[in-house]
Length: 351
Length: 73
Image (cartoon, rainbow over all chains, first blue to last red; front, side, top):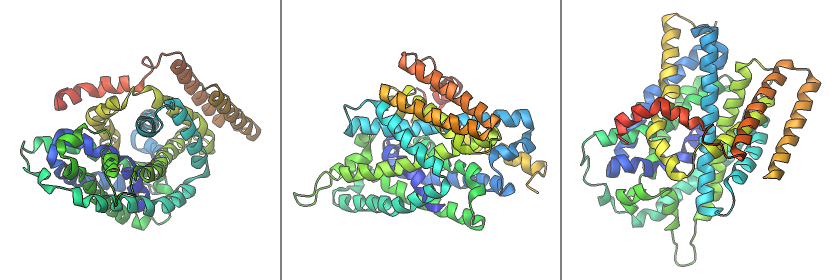
C-alpha cells in the first residue's frame, strides 16, 4: 500500500510540481509543500474513516445506503467521469513530455493509443499484478531520485531560498493548492480498500506514505536551489533539467535517458491504478459480473480524452495550477467528507 | 492511425464475442454503451470537432469563476 501510494503520487508530482508551485510561491515553494502535507492529514483521515465504516465494499456498493439510489447513481457516475478524466490527464502529461522532449516527430495519438493498449492488458490482470510491478519499480525509482539529488548537491545554492516569506503567506497558500490535489489522490482507496488483505495496517501505511511524499516533494523543490525560483517557474519539466546538468567527469553525461526509462515505468503504474479504479468503479456501479469487460471501452475513452483536452503543455499547466485544485477537491475532499458526515449522523455502516 | 483503429476494433470484437458467449446481458449493454460513446468521441476527434466535445469546457465553466476569483486570471 505504502509503495503504491508513493509511486502513484510521485510519478507526476516530482516532474511537474516544482514549476507549478514556483509560479505562485517562488522561493517559498518548500513551505507550500509542508502546508499541503499538513492539510493532507485530515484528507487522509476522512478517506480512512469513510472506508473504515464500509471495509468490504467499494464506494458504488454503499453509496445507495447513504444518499439513496438516484443520488447514489448520480454521484457514482460523477466519480466514474472523474476517474476516467484524471487518467486521461495523466496520459496527457505522459504524452506531452515524451512528445516535447524525446519523440518529437511521433504524433501524440500514436503515443496515447499504444500506451493505453499496453496498460489495458495490465489492468485486466488485476491488482496483484499491479502490486508486483510496483515492488520491482519502487526501489529503482526512489534510488534514481536520491542519486539525482546527491549528484546535483554541488551545484545547489541554498541562498536562492531567501528571503523567506517575502510576499507574505498568501502566495504560499496558493502554491500549496495544486500540491494538495496530488496528496488527495489517495481517494483511490474508496475503490481498492476492500481488496486490501491487511486492513489493520492501512492507516499506518497511509501516514508513512504521506511522510515519504513530503520528503520526496521537498527534494523536488531543490531545483530552486539550482536554477532559482524564477527560472524553475519558466521550465516545463524542472526535474528533467536537473538531471540534464549531471556530469561525472567528462564521460558520464545525459542521465536523462535513464530518467525517462524509469519515469515511464512510474507513470505507467499511475495510469494503471487510475484506469483499474475506473474499470472496477464502472463494473460495481452497473452491477456487472466482472470489471474486465469494461477495460477496453473505458480505455478508448481515456485515450480520446487525453488527445482532445489539451492542445499543449502550457494549457495543461494552466489547468493543473488554476482549475484542477477546485475540480479535484470536490471529489477528493468535499464529497467524501459529506458522505462521512451522513454516515456518522445517520449511523450507517457495514453490518 | 488506420492500423491502430483496426487493432482497436479487433480487440473490441473479441471482447464482444466473449461477453456474448458468457450470456451476460448487463455486461454487454454497458460494454456497447461505452464503446458507442468512445467511438463517437474518436470520430469527432478524427473529423476535427475536438473542441466541441472537450470535457474540460464543462469543467472550466463550473470551476473557472472560482479559479478567477482566487488566481485572478
